Amino acid sequence: MTQHRRRGRPVRFAAAGIALVASLGPAAAESGDLLHVGDRLKITVYEVVESADRSGAGEPQEAGAPPVQAAYPRLDLSGEYLIESSGRVMLPLIGAFDAVERPVEALRAQIGDAFVRTFRRRPDIAVTFVQRAPVYVVGAVRNPGAFPFAAGLFVAQALALAGGDLTNAPPERALEIVRSREQREAARERLKALLVRRAVAKSESEGAALAADEGLIKLVGAETAAGLMNREQRLIKLRAQERSSARTVQERAVATAEEEVELLSQRLANYDAQVKARGDRLRIMEGLFSRQVVENERVVDIRRDYADMEGRRRDIEISLLQSRQRLEAVRRAREQGELDRRLALENEFVRVTGELREAERGFEAATTVASLLARGQGPEASEAAAVTYDILRRHGGGLETLHVGQGEMLEPGDVLRVQIGRPSEGVGKVAGK
Figure 1: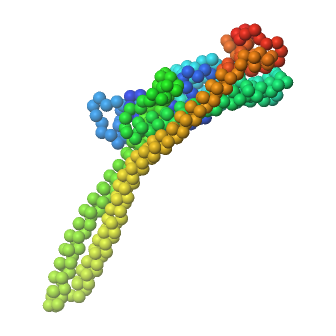
Figure 2 (figure 1 turned 180 degrees about the vertical axis):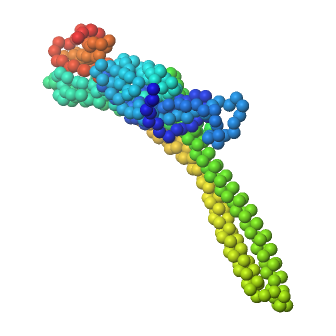
């Protein structure tokens, strides 16, 4: 059976395995993130082809060396996909896959298995979130509707997005707490990103192994920090492979320029010898002509031949000069590229270190404010506002109703229902349709 495939230009690797993690989308998909109906994903598929020929990578063939692997982007399979109401993602050529309430890694594994069955090739697949399913706020709120989901979104934040509830007294203090928590979460995310950037800049500038420092582990935990480092390590490897390919191109350009200079130098030496020989012959013939031994026409022919040879020699000399200039230019470009890279890494490390100090101060300040506001909120405030919060969440093919408080975390696709009435007896879970 003939298979029609669209493939981009290959990326060659001399390694036993390839791990490609794309971070081009708005949010990289962590392996533990569960998928929901309405999530829009960017799925990038590479087809990995192995070859025993290493000559294309500019490296000598060695006994027992691992095969060269080329990763071809599968443009016919890569793209943006929506998790439909059926809970499935449909990819052309290889089928539909169950996605809802499953981690991203499970979806990648399903697609990979189907790719192997269909094409008999090993794939490498990257999944990123383009957009999460929105959160819906309905009921006794000022501005009901759908709101974009963000990591760490909880009930009080969703209530603030909807303009607050419709009780007579506006929840100013609750909104202050919400704003303080939002500021603390934003400061935390910025601090986390800067800690990761500093670790990457330090690793690349010093050529050392990538490792999470104590600040990042304390902020997000050892497991999450290890996951972040693994993702960045894969990106570092890709950048290193890209630099290696660029260096190979530069080395080839230098070698070509050197060969051209050597060839022209040899030709110039040959022309020098021929010009000398013709000059000696011309002087002999002019001496014979002065003694009237040879005719003038013969001398004129030899003089013309000498002038023609001298002109060719000058052309070769000019070409040799130009070749030497090109050789010098490619050598400078090779050296300058490495210097620019090292300078950029040093500047990045210094810049991130300065930003990190500011982010640490901002996070500490936001944490202190949030703690003071939460500590100052008495129990009578929550009892006075007879507002209840229910979350309608997809679960196991149906809907689950959760009676929650303002601190409950939301998931993509949740429906937050706000009601005003008798205060709830407590916060719990009630399954319902």
